[in-house]
Each structure stands twice: as C-alpha cells, then as structure tokens.
Length: 590
Ligand SMILES: [Zn+2]
Image (cartoon, rainbow, N blue to C red; front, top):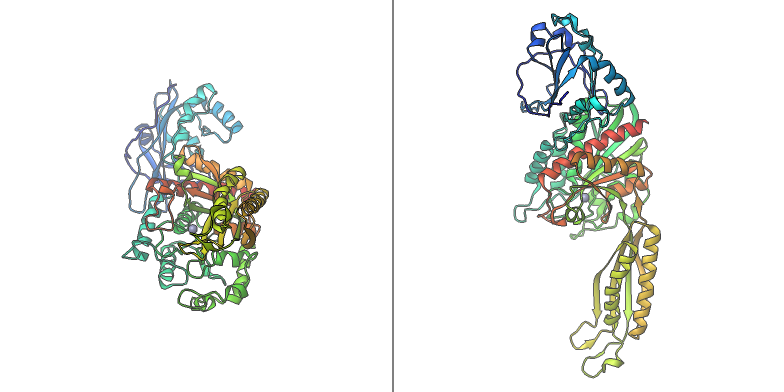
C-alpha cells in the first residue's frame, strides 16, 4: 500500500472527546473514549476529532470507514499546537491502514517498541460502520516520536516490508507545548529592559540595580507557573517544580552580564530553561516524575569584583573562601561584602547554599559558544565535553638595560628578545598538546625607545581539557623559556598566578546531549571543550553529573553588544535542551 507523504491539511471541525496527555516523553498518547464521541456519520465523513487539554496540547484523529470489502480504515493523526495566542498549526501527516494488518502491526510494534506505529487493537467494524462496531478505537494507542518541526525525516521502520507504509507516523511533529519563539520574544524583552542606550549592550552587572530589575522581571515572567521560588544564601534564585521523586533535574544559567555585554550570554540558558519548565509542567500537569529546578546563578561573570562563578562556587562548596572574597573591591572602592549585603546576601552564610544541590541528580546548561568553532564547521549545536583546565603564570625575563646606540648586537642581554621567542614558541606547543596558550601581557623596563630591554614581565595562560596534557604543555613552555633565556644571556623565573584542573562532564549526559543536538537539528553535531569557565564547572566539581550544550555564536564574538546567534539556531537550541531534559529525566529514573 502506498504511503501518503506528510501533507498539510486544514482543520475541518471540532469535537471534544477526552484524550489523555502524553504519558511518556516520547509521547505515548492513549486516545481514550474517543469512540464515545464518534457517530457513524462523523466517522464515515472523515471528520476530525479533536482533543484538547488546558488549551495547549491538541491531537487530532480522524477515522474514515470505507467499504467493508476493503476493510480499510483511514486514520489521520496530527498535532495541533495551539499557542496561547490561538494559532493552530495544520495537520502534518496522514496515512492509510488496513485493519487486517492491525494484529500483525501490533506484534511487530511490541517487538520494536521504539519505532513509531499505530497499535491496532480495534475490531473490524461492522458494515454499518457504527460506532458500536468499532469499539477498539476507544483503546487505540498511538505512539509517535517527538520530533521537532525542523527535523522531519521520512523514517519508516525500514526493512519490514509493508510496515514501511506506516513510517509516516515518525514524521509527526512532537506533541509538545514547547514554544521556542516565546524564548526569543522574552530575550528581546529583557534586552529592551536592560540595555544601555549609548552602547546598545546589556548592563546586567551583578549586584547592581539593573541586574536586580532583570531578576524581578524573570520572577514576573515565571509567575504563571506553579513554582516555588526563593533566593538561597548565596543569592542564587531557584525555581522549583516539585515532582513525584525528590531527585532533581537542574537547569541553570545566569542573568548577569559584563558591562556592555551581549543579549544572549547567560540569559539564553535561563529563558530556554524556563520554556522547558513550562513544557514539563504542561506535560505532567504540574507533577513531573522528578523534581525539576531552574537556577539563576548570582554573579557568573565576576565583572564588578573580578571574581567569576561567585554564586555557583559558593553553592558547589569546593572553591569558595569568604575571607578571600570579602576584601575585593570594585573600581569605586566598594567592598564585595558590602555590595552583597545590599542585595540581601551575607558572605559568611553563602556556603549554606550547598544544601540546594543535595538531591541534584543532573545539571544541564545551554550556552552560546562564545567562540568560532561551530560556525566554522557550519553546525548549529554542539555537546560540551568539559571545561578546560588552566595554568596561569607570570614569567620574568631579566637581562641588562643598555644604551641602544652604544651596545653592539652581540653584546646585548635583551629580555624582550627571549620573551618574544617564547611568545612564538607557545604556538607549536599548544598545537602539539591540543590546548591553547596565550601570552596576554608583556611589560618591558625601562620601556623607552633608546634602551635595550633589561626586564620583561610576561603572562602566560595555558588551557587544555586533559590534565596530563596541560601539565606537559606547562613543562614544555618552561623548558623553552630556559632555552631562550640562555640564548639571550638572560635569566628567567616563573610564578603561578592561578590554576584550575580540567572539569570533564558526565559521559552519559554528553552522549544524550549529542543525540539531542543531532535529532533536533537533523545535522551532525560536534563535541567540543569549553575554553571559558561556566557555572556548570562548579556544579560538576561538586559531584553532580553535568553537561553543557553550545549553540553557534555568529563570528564567535561575545562579551560585546554585537554578540549574536541566528534566531533559527536559538529556537533549535531550546528544542534541543528540551529534548535533552526529557532524556535526562528518563536517565535519572533508571
Ligand atoms: Zn555566560
């Protein structure tokens, strides 16, 4: 039997039988009591039976009886995603089924539970086509993949002969109330609310009035959901949707930005997470199988006091010492602990926020990539393997300051020459170990145009995902600096500024993240490390299974008003995060 290609058919009429919500994340919809509503007339007239709950999710089903001779039942199923604005998407798939094949389908379907079939349990209708003659419709089960609108491969249950005819079911878009367009609208709203008029950049620097306004707006935006909302002792805001299990799925991001920052960094994560919460709330009528929480971390950027990941590190508990932090000051001389107190946070109590993650079973974070890798590969999404470890050192080369006119070239002890050689040598070193190395600052003394450089203070920042490679990269740079110092008749000394070990994300979650990216984008994804640090690193260090998802950044630029991502990619990232949340809930329950 030929399969009908998915097509678009308008909605014809409305009825209102009861239909259950999808009971599982891949949307097993049990159409209950539909038969009660189906008159013979409507059944034979190919009318639509609509089902609707909470004004959001709709599934349409139509049955058409043709002659008993052919024993054909034409069934249409599709999704009507009714937005709150009252828009409806048209039906997107249809097909024909021989009733005689139902028993066989059912057997095969049970063997292959992850394929998409109509499970025919209905009896053959009698010649009159009366509703009583087709009681099975009342127990008809329809299983569909939740696929995104952007991913509609015609995936039949391949190699099963006739069953290929039913493959169209897998093209049915997800019965989801997720509305990624709403996320884009909310991001634009936030941008308008918190943008500096002169630069066009976001001004949500943590512990400032604009940041507080952004957080109030977030609470307001989430207020339609049955969530428990509170700030913890570290100033992180938690939005909790209680589930049947105490185990928690956490989704995180940060509303704060750098001064004159971009419109997506941090807040995309939060607002995408909010949209996923809405969908989960809808799907499970406010009680998902596990507790789902959105967290807005306080002061991820460290833009004002130079201390990144403040709220998440206090919560993670691994890397936070109040006495080290309290004395930091901003450019106006205001102390960190005073600025926090103004926002209701007592620095000595911040570590108590660790209690928030005692039931955390998994942590997910979506983020713009902030780099050029995905764009260069022409891929929208990527799964993040972990965050780079960092070795950060100050390097001092000491030679001899001397007159630029009277000192012959072969008699010089030029500290800059040694530093410059190292600045070039770190490139092959980075390449060899698959990391990145940056000499970000070079200061020379005496630093005048007529003197050979006597002292050169440089900084070296080295990052890699593997701890052993990072260590070897560091050693190689040290060795090279000794060689160059000797060549230039200088001395060299190193002192560590800061270091952090690499954080590797959870293997299972990385795989689920990768799969979600592929399934939603319909393209390959990429697995990549994160160069910048993120709150996810602190959560992972605290022992919570963690993964991040990246969405492509245009031109790889961030922390800048021109930071941008294609709207289609933003929407795709919301869908992919949603899909990952689904997979993660199932994983937590396993
Ligand atoms: Zn960020």
